[in-house]
Length: 334
Ligand SMILES: [Zn+2]
Image (cartoon, rainbow, N blue to C red; front, side):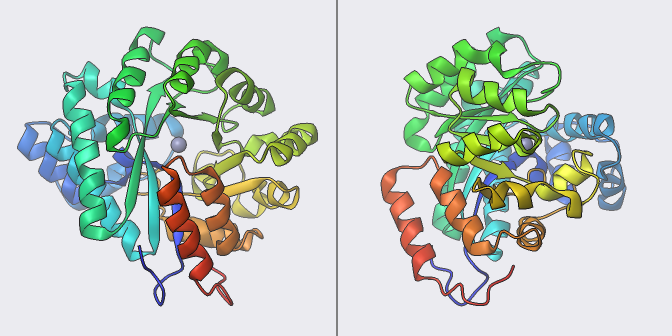
């Protein structure tokens, strides 16, 4: 975890690991696993994956994730992403994966968790990147499919699983539906890191805090529509995991200049910065870091805001803090 002299240190807390896989790797996985993709060349697959509309994004997500079937696929996804993260100075990643869809397609729970956790261990050894994992509950699936995620997350706590998230159609499935599950998440000592305040407004953020005991909010940017909530987030010190470029792609904001990150930060809300779906939304951590810097949150603040929200064990957090404090941030703008 030493980056002095290279790109400035970064912490990424909101990245969907399934959305980090390059087309060439997807094609290789599809061939090996006997799965079909809508294109059989890198260029064709890149064209298919290009973000157009949200419904198309979902179609892409399904096609892409269906090729990932073996523990070794999940391991590789983590290690490949850690290699890219290390290249841009990223020292800590909290990666998201969505197990329920894979399990519906016949992938054993154990293969998923073993693969991702093996990947996290290998990421540290080979690339010096600390990876922690936060499986997402899919809102669109029945509650019964959420419980095993919490159970398996608890079993793999010693191997890098630090929290449980909530993803999927926020506009149709509000946070409170999942209150009993997140009560268990917290009882098990895991972090609560739901998506909220992306496709729905402030009420969703408020419920994520109150009904789910959110330790951080993934997105949360639409809290900006309610000045009272913004003050509350600032007072609580709740970290928002903001992804400026994906917010433009999905139409949450019209363009980067209109992004509420500037006003959230000015009001004292701690905002970390992440890429969300780098390959599937044609973006990168660096692009988001630069966008956030242009919106008035310098890379040093991004690093220490994220550090306030990490769910890893205190020893790792302390190492990250020392690394951030030892770095010469003078003149680092992005
Ligand atoms: Zn997300």
